[in-house]
Image (cartoon, rainbow, N blue to C red; front, top):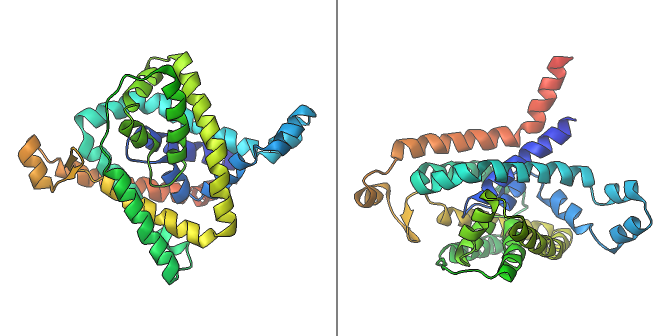
Length: 296
């Protein structure tokens, strides 16, 4: 039961990150130590799973795909997305600086954990730097505006989900770049089921294909892949720097000259809050074990 609750809570954290353009749910999964299990579970939806389904061996199928883990995690993700979409949209429009600062705190506090997870060599340092460069280049891409045709929601779902499960690259930001973030958020908040079904179909297609590639890389080049992904997470800090406008990074004082307030105090509080939240999330298992022992 404790594991189920932990997975749901981590799913809630991933969903909250996925709603924000520039932050990745994959980043949270990577930071929280469930990334490899998530990829393995998604990748297990294969021909063997189809065979078990056709044979009616539902219990074996559930175990094969790590069904309980996926159910808990995606329940948390979906609950978070639908409950926080309006709140985060409001913050992005009216209080963006503290929101970005909060996610900066999350990532900064997690970096020591990520760096310790790799056995470093010269090649892995190079991969780390390549990951940083890749994330910065993606973060510098400019968004576009368009009127989407229905099929574009399927394509957007497939591309965004690939970014979403790649730490450091935000699926929401990819949607923003392709001009699909606004239409998708409208579909979510207004429960446009037809549009959401197209988008979800694209997500499923992209998820099953891209997760297999990442899972293979982690199995055969584990530390090298982790080094690259850690670099991508570090590079993502460029995109979520709190004081920026039109892709331009500003100092708090430059930002204040343009927008009357730099929200420095609120940003500082938000960074501390982010550090505290990620510390709690990273220690969920220990906290649950302590609570369980205390209850006895």
